[in-house]
Image 1 (tube, one colour):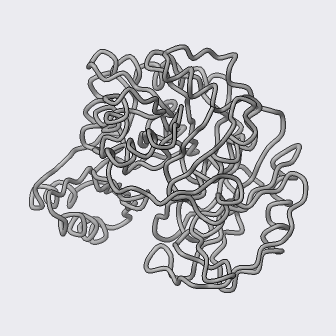
Image 2 (cartoon, one colour):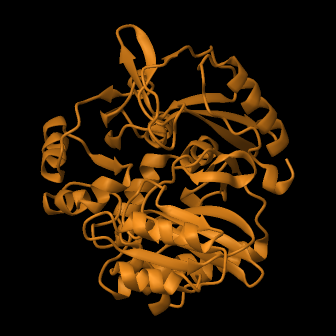
Length: 412
């Protein structure tokens, strides 16, 4: 089977690496890819719209396409592929509203009894300011649209909350979601979905702020532990109250969900509640979860597209992974690019996924904010964490921003 992966970041590098382990895959293509992906797959220039991506799949004789980032999903790439009789793993544009429109997503959760924080949505600046000004603190202000994981502000003063609201409404067609702050351990559960069934992957925990101890502005994610020590009771409630209800709700509304459903959750004193849904593999969660996948990713994706997913298709090996992001100076603001990178030879259980790299002649250089995802496996989280930071120390990346406390919330 020839498989095309759409995207060019660390998540897609991890997807391509998992596909290369798939016995059913004969060739992997990636558009646009990156220098790390190019060592594993044939990289092609990236078309700009769904029709051109479908043309590419036809021209290359692709049997299955896996969509990595949220933007092509929100643009309707899966709808275009389906209309052309092409197999694409990912939700339709309407189903992807779970991520692309947070206000719609929150309303969907209320309609289907999915536990989440109390909230209100606004498309008017004055109304949003009037609501947030007397709101108990802390309060969470979210941009309802796609902001690459950076459209969320946890506000600890009303001045900060008003500033966050005003920032959202500097954009055209802006909409803000304002919600109660939830306390507890945050966990991500990714699930393979075939429209009817949701089969969860190993739970993980991301670290979203730029600085240690969860301080500073939000990023796309600065590091992950996997598996997160989720209790059997919480796992069962996540399955029945969140994943199953989301799939049955979308199916009832005429938009069956196929692909990976990302449930970002808070383990509150009242049980698991949804912080947000995403419509694809998380990034950097994919870089921590997929190295532990012990079954054929391409076959799982095919089964989802065909509506034939079963739990026995999804197997994970024992052990743990820790992912540490090396980000460019200036991120999450304006990152410095063009920094020369020198990567070490890898040992067993180690991986470096390229998230924002490019080539300047013969040199590997930084091209984005989150530049490298450093991953190590071990028999347990403590061992994997020590190995990950040891590998970080062997990477030559001048000025890199690194969180040294990945796993601190569970005492690592």
